[in-house]
Amino acid sequence: MSNDTDERLAPDALEGKNLSPSNLALRRVAIDTYRENVAYLHRDCAVYRAEGFQALSKVEVRANGRRILATLNVVDDQNIVGCDELGLSEDAFLQLDIQNGHPASVSQAEPPESIGALRRKIGGERLGREDFGGIIRDIAELRYSKIELTAFVVATNRDELDREEVYFLTEAMVASGRTLDWHERLVVDKHCIGGIPGNRTSMLVVPIVAAHGLLCPKTSSRAITSPAGTADTMEVLANVELPFEQLADIVRDHRGCLAWGGTANLSPADDVLISVERPLAVDAPGQMVASILSKKIAAGSTHLVLDIPIGPTAKVRSMPEAQRLRRLFEYVAGRMHLSLDVVITDGRQPVGNGVGPVLEARDVMRVLENDPRAPNDLRQKSLRLAGRLIECSPDVRGGDGFAIARDILDSGRALAKMNSIMAAQGQKPFDHNNPQLGALMFDIRATESGVVTGIDNLQVARIARLAGAPKVIGAGVDLFRKLGAAVVAGDVLYRVHAGFQSDLEFARQACGKSTGYTIGRTQDVPHVFVEF
Image (tube, rainbow, N blue to C red; front, side, top):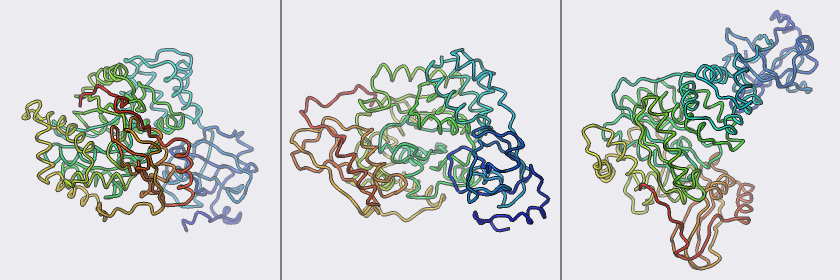
């Protein structure tokens, strides 16, 4: 049968398929509902009337020997779903692995078993291991509606989880999906808590430590609210959506990878929770710790270097706050038998010069090729993080890691390793001397003379996203001046690139409200006390 999304079955065709009132013809509704299975029934559908369904309730859909849970939406337009059809959103349809018109049954879904524990958490009670295990199991199986998910996220944010609860939450999230075992004593990874534009250190750390011989299977996320995630930037250079079996072979053969983590089914409940946390701008410490550590432990990591940037517009804005977060990470990691090295870094401004997939890929390749135009801050931070990972090796003396990492980068071994990883993942043509940037652009210039005393990470990221990043890979912000740089009125602070006129105007309007730059005196440049 055709897989055309517009194909409809006539009533006589339905009779030929022996469809009962509770056995409808599936219809692919081409709507991306972002990690939420959604089913669509027509208001005049006999099943909808007979079963007493309500909009936004959970239903169970069975077809092709498979079962999924979905949130029900009710429609009145037969062009979307007919009375004899059951519509499914993109993700839901793909999970069933069927064609349009395939028979399916739909019924009321049983309430999640953990709903009682959720209500107790909403009431402010402390939950135990079994409570979190039940909640996360139901979340991973998509038994919670978006309303119930939101209630859980808000409840755990409002009444901050104690450290034991964070441990139980992390443990449950690891158990909700697959756990990898690389059969090696030392499996390393590096992670940043986020919030700093252009911070593509992972794309330099991985080839450096892999060239040293350490196993570093780096699975990364795509951007949700940032101008680019590691996976978005790496996708400029090579394929990142790979079958897990191929990914595992690449890691074994090349000692590392840089790929999107969506195919590995690692801590799947975390992906569902993130779909609610990000629109709410909720990033509570307990949820952050559980999210990051569950992914790393599920991926088989034994040693993790964690980057916590601090600065006026970073996620963490003071050293006391960073130290509290560090202690929570260390407690949970210790309980989960993960060796953790937390590094507090400078988060006062973006890292590197480019913000957006192509611009960030340009910076990464320039560092790897030891190009004199390479941003030194990105190079130095990557070397220090790679050095800390190299020092996880028992045959490396503490303090020697940076020099080893620098030798690997300067000698070209890191570039050779990156090239082999890109080739294995499916390399794409890219010229960092002539990157394909968005053809539409405008410059933001200094309105007065002085020194750059502030760069707002949040505003720079927002401008880059409004310009089209990461969907338009050549869009973004190219920074020409960083903190402490002397400028005179008229100097270009940064250039905005876009691929579409509408995006360019959105970015221009945002710059009109705030450029994200502050010009002042040298003594006004903020200082932070960091570990490097």
